[in-house]
Length: 128
Image (cartoon, rainbow, N blue to C red):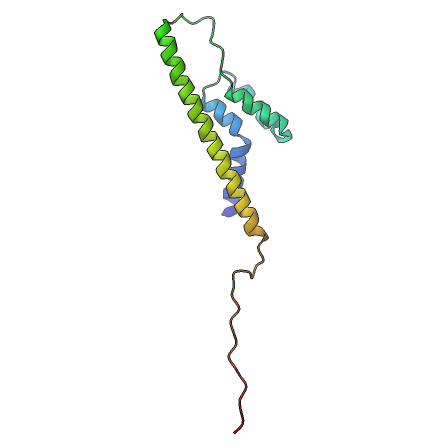
């Protein structure tokens, strides 16, 4: 069971850039996912995918122009949402690292370390 949980957390950490991109509704979520899956193991590819998933998308040129008030309110909402998503991602990564360190420490403990030695009763009999 612990191995399954460790594997799930490791997979979630590995796919974190793709998860963030999907949560932020990025236009290039498929490309970010492909980069994450194919080159994430190099760590450089994982960092590039993470940065790409956290970047702000440029607006489409085909959209109708918004009023200044609408644009400011939407920008404020997007900034708050982006910050909260980043903090959630940071907390998930921190929790995963803490969990993996905890599991690693428990794996290194000797098997009989938790058991206390029981004192054997005195079997010496005294002759009268």
